[in-house]
Amino acid sequence: MREWLTEFRTFDGLLWAGDTIIATSKNHARHILDTSGRGYMEVIGWLVATVDEFTGERIDKDSPFVN
Image (cartoon, one colour):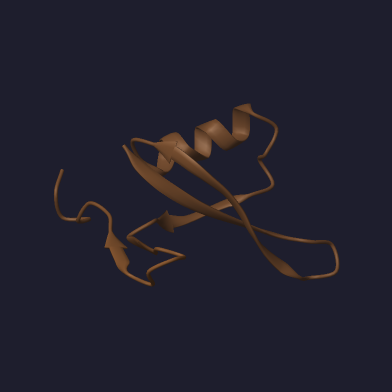
């Protein structure tokens, strides 16, 4: 499963980062949002890497080409 990133826009037009959703596909992530009361969020893509807050080291997630 992948970690999917979301975002949402407020009524005054500001863009905010949303929740991270663990799902098998973008459609599955969308379904989770819709059925959990977070249908206002948009799934924007999967998380490809993070940065360790203490060491600053990049941690790559699964390649998008492996599945």
